[in-house]
Picture 1 (tube, rainbow, N blue to C red):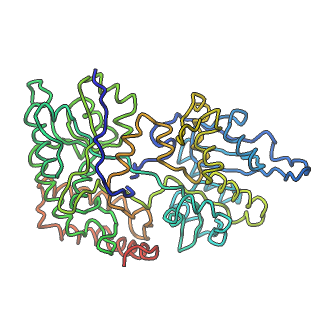
Picture 2: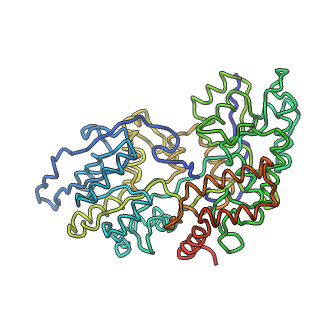
Picture 3: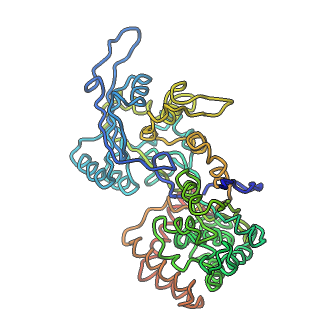
Length: 520
């Protein structure tokens, strides 16, 4: 059984922020899922009884925090809570809601009734709403009290909690990109082919995987490329210097929208030619969830655009080896094109979460300072950041040669991500949690990306993003499948601007991004 799951040796690439992910890459441990569950930590002090004022000790303060999440243990088994309580003289009462909709409803009710939590997660839409209603604390004048937080999350993340130039929320520190092309090395070997280095070679290899029976079963039952809809071509767009459709990014000193980038038509023309070869998954635009992964695992596709967890976590390695023990998937460097190598785009404006403080807490200065202390403490690499990542040193993890090594007891603090209100040093965290996958995550993170800015943009009144996005996808599909000539691209833009109010959106986006210092 072959288990040679190595990434290709990384070339000297220019590192750049890329997802979303993932990717959106999402919450939790960044590479796994957690079962449903909820909890409310009322704490051993039963509402925050005061400590004796002896020996310089100060009173214990109860802080209530709410957020979406799951798998929070009871207070007497919550080691993270206990460590934070002990370090900061707190009775930290955390409540989580497995359903995002349930959380949103609960928060809306509490904000409307004046029953404010002391710290709470907000979506961008809630941030705008509550800030406009005057319910959130303007943190702009408190930045000196949050110095460690500022240093930890960075200036770009600070912008993600701004409304009209004022900071109303603390956004988590940035995540890292997960996606790359993966390719069947054993198929390349079987056909005597080299790893493709350009978009033209990528297309040639995809055609060979479709036409030349790379699995040797005597059947024409394979195709070259698959992925999740348009994202399958993310590195191809990148090779033309173009972000994904609808992305905003800085090009030649100015902010542009990908749909208006002159190179977009060239990228679409190349993709159309690629599809015309018959080497692309015929169900590409219908793929949802992990259907493209399933096709790769079954041996139907030889190239896939996907994140490293869904190719290298143990359960997927086992699935692939069960289907074909000789399958050898390796990561592929972004192919070169007219604009160079860019492994798609990554939204540097996105955030895995943001937390706000109610304005009403100004009337309780001691409690407000404890909230600041909590946020600073969990943002301190030499303080609480390790606690909310890994638990207690010597019990849940060890430091060996400067590296975090997790111990078996780490399972007792699998919920620690719930306390990462300001985020975590992503690569350090992921490499410690998933040491076998370290090379794959590093490879993905080091690929050059176009830095998209959409996460910084709020939708203006009168613009419905879902309708516009659906129209864009439908019309671009017509172009790449030859159902509409690219000569009609200007007409597509004109309809988009008028019928979908897209010009209102782009004008507003450019204004918002200029206010944040992007573009000329």
